[in-house]
Image (tube, rainbow over all chains, first blue to last red; front, top):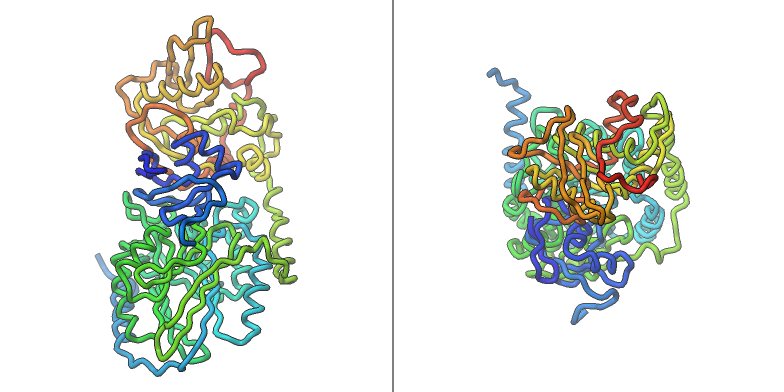
Length: 72
Length: 495
């Protein structure tokens, strides 16, 4: 299946979780998410857990921890 | 084929249920109170993380004591994710007792409800004090009961609420994300399509809710397609939705995962329809009050005696990464009928398994909860995986089952060739395609060529090892065993 991370398409095995996709996307980003300096969100800015289950075609965003989306 | 009366009833059950739906929609809607407040607490994707249930119980009970219309909904995936709870005997018992004690009103099963197996789930469902609800699961004739597609609740103040359930299915096989054997005999229909058939409930009720296990992205699509809904309370994607979103006029809520949050949706019904709605999450870490009785239950369950159970006895201690890695990869290959399996050395967290192997030993040896991933690979693609693994530290990194390999390097440890051999010592045919099992960690963090993106087999590497050991394999093989070689040899003592 394909998941977009920060706009970049990542092809990964079906049934992959958020952590799997991030490891494949960027080792550096994954380390930042692991140490809490960055978080993973959906397109509306909602935080998703590392073990979150994914459907093909979803989009994830890695961003600075604690940053709130506009209007919230 | 002779059809029995029972099988006819089972065959027509979905039709009978839909007929009931039609009748419900025909029913005249009784007048609702002028003003009513309904509170729905909800959680999802607990995955065996039970420790905060004492806080959940205290919060829900506090609200119930105030005498209003209070419900507690579960949006699925109570199992899989905490070995202490997952390995309990009988399976599911801690969750059963806790959900009953919390006073859950309704559960919409998620894909991981099926992980404990249909027989165990049937026994679980028979003993819950609340119904399961799912509109897109059709039972077969194998004894698993047909779940209600929806329930209609009537509040103390006279408000009628219809709630239907939905479970996710994978695009590829049309099944929920669990091992296909775990849902054998059940049929699953496309959830968004099935939801549209629930529109009829709108006319017979003041409030229409979806209790779903679809993922937040699919819940958004459901809201776009079905503005008749007042709210969707969901799970599956482990999304922390705080506050709840209003999408196409539908409130969409989800409470993260692992029992870190309790969702609270509040509906204000005025003159027969929902006039106000809001949803928020309560962070359980910040809560102090706990229900002492539930706390005691949790403490009891966390002392799972099954963890000390001896699941296999070896004639000697199994020692070293070669022996342990061979055992782990044999287990993956055996459990899933694969041709080849690999295990990275960093994922082998013990150097020795004693003669009496307990469940606790397995989760110490393999604590990460990695899934088994199947990838169909050519010999050259397997070589690519071995090459990347070796390059990580200029030494053997992957243990293997189903073949052996030799990495030949020059004096600067640059790889010159990689020889793959079948267990009988003959070269692995280059033209073959091989079903290769690796952990989700290897599949996602190693760079190797593979045209097949692969698929998760809905089972962890530790599960495979437990099943393998319980099958009583010949453990005398795992002394002095070696399947991965380098020439010239690696630094002594490195593996």
